[in-house]
Image (cartoon, rainbow, N blue to C red; front, side, top):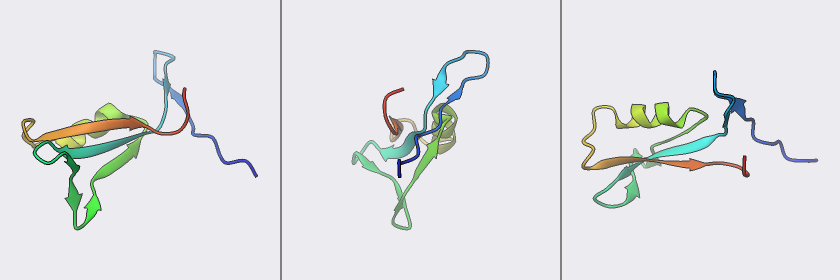
Amino acid sequence: MRPAMPQRHAEPGTGALRQPCLVRLVDLRTGLTHRVNGSPLLRVTQAPAEAAAELLAGRDARVWEARIEPLGGAA
């Protein structure tokens, strides 16, 4: 059986494809992904800019960074 291919959707009004991405919150002091109760704080999304903004909301930009990594194959 063939594995399912990642779904890609067009950006409204642009025709650009959006692929699933992993967005993680990183502590710049340590370079490590932030953890809550031992679990890494991350999101899998097709709207990485919005997810990054949510993860960074209310946090000091000198300490925190949102890193976005595409998932799956090339677009």
